[in-house]
Length: 583
Image 1 (cartoon, one colour):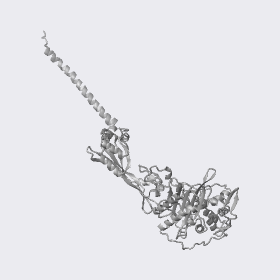
Image 2 (image 1 turned 45 degrees about the horizontal axis):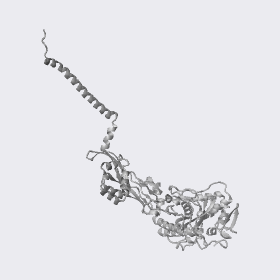
Image 3 (image 1 turned 90 degrees about the vertical axis):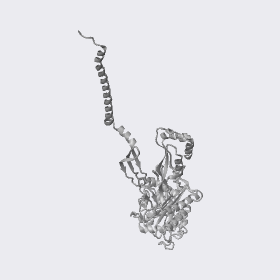
C-alpha cells in the first residue's frame, strides 16, 4: 500500500521542469543576441565596411593645402606689371552660426553687417538660406583693416580664409595687354588668360590622421607644391607709359572714338609698347563697359590707306617694272578706270618714286601697280606680314581681310595700291614697316623678351628696302604730307594714311587717321604705328592728328633707348627729282 504524497514533496518533484524551461529561454535569448551581434559585425566588417571607414575618416582624417601665389608678369627690365598680394576672405559656417544663435547678440551682429555693407536681415538671409550648409562666403579679397575689425568682433561661426588678389602697378597704361583675373585668381583677359597655365602653380597637399587631442599621428599622403612661372614680356614700361600718354591725349583732344599705338624693335621683332585708348583701371573694374577690355591693336582691323603706298612702289621695284630712277607721269591728276575715278589732290606732272611717296600720289602708285601682275602685289603684301597672324599669339588677334582671289578688275588693283579693299591691324602694319626698317627681313613679332631673335625670311631686296626708308623720309620733309612727324635731332621716315570707314553700301563720313614710320633712318631701330579711330571736327587726316603722336612717341623712345641723334648724317637719296612739283 502506497503512502500518500505530501504537497511539499509534489512541489519538489516539479521544480526541475520549471527551472529547465527558464534556463532554456535565457539561453536562447542570449544566443539570439549573440547571433545578432555577430551578424551585425559581419555585415559592417565584411559586407558594408565603407560606412565605418568613412565615419572614422571624418573624425580623424584631415587635409591641408599650401597656398601658391600666382606668377608675376614683368616688363623687359624686371618691373612688375602684375603681382599677387595675400588677402583674406570672410566666410561663415551657417550651422554653427544658428546653433550658437549668433544673431541674438545684436551689437556684434549689426556691426558685422555694417562692415560688410549689408543690413542685419540680409546677412541673416545669406547665412540662414540653408542651415545645413557648413560654408558660405560673406566677402572675398577683403581689405586687411576690415578683416582685423571682423576678427575682433568674435562672432561665433564667422571664420577667415587665406587667398590672393592680383594687383596691376601699371594700371590703365597696360590694361588691355595684361588683362586681369577673376575673384578665383583665374585669368580671363589678355596675357593673364593666354598664359594662365604658366602663371598658375599647383598647391601642395597633405593628408594626415590626428588623434582625439588633434595631434598629427600619421601622414597618409603628401604632394609637393609646384611653383608658378614668372613671365617676362618684351614691353618696356617706360616706352609703354609715354605711348599711352600721347595716344590718350590725341584721342581726347580730337574727340576720337578710340586709338591704338604699337612700337617694335625692328632687329628682334620684340614689341616694346602696345597701347589702346580709352582704357580702364584693372584694379577696380566695377561698372567698366566690357568693350573697353578689347585689345584694339590686335583685334580691330581697318583699311590702311596710303600707308600701303611704300609697299605698292616696292612691288613694282621687285617685279622689275620700275627702278630707283623711274619717273612716272601722273598728269592730269586723275584718270577713269572702269567707270570709277582715281584722283590726286593736285596735278603733280611727273614724279620720281620718292616724289610719289612724298606727295602721296594715288595716280603714281596706281600706274605702277597696273603694270604688275596682281599675284605679285598680293604676294609682297603677304610676305611682309599682312593677312596673317603677327606671331605674338595673343587671344583675339585678327588676321584682317586679305583676298587671294584670281580675278581682279583694274580699279580694284588700283585701289589696292593705296590701301583700299584690304584691312589690317595696327600690329600687322607695324610688322610690315619693321620689315622695311631691317633691310627687308620679315620676322614674326614676339611679346616675350628675347636675346635670340628668329632669323626671319627675306621679303624685299635690301637695296630697295633701304631706298624706301629714305623715300619715306621725304614724306616728312617740307612739301611732304607729314611734316608734323619730324623728331628734333633724328632722321625719321614714314607714311600717313587717311581712310573713310566702310558702311553697308559704301563709305560713310567717319575717318581713320594713321601714321606708320621708322627711325632713326641712318640705323633703323624702331617701327611705330599710330591709329586714331573716328576723329571728330575738321581735322581728320593722318598727317594732322596721327603724325604728331608718332613724333612724340618715337622721339621719347629713341631717347629712352639712348639712340644717338643722326640728324647730321646725309641720306643716300639727297633730293626728290622728277617733275616741277616733286618737292
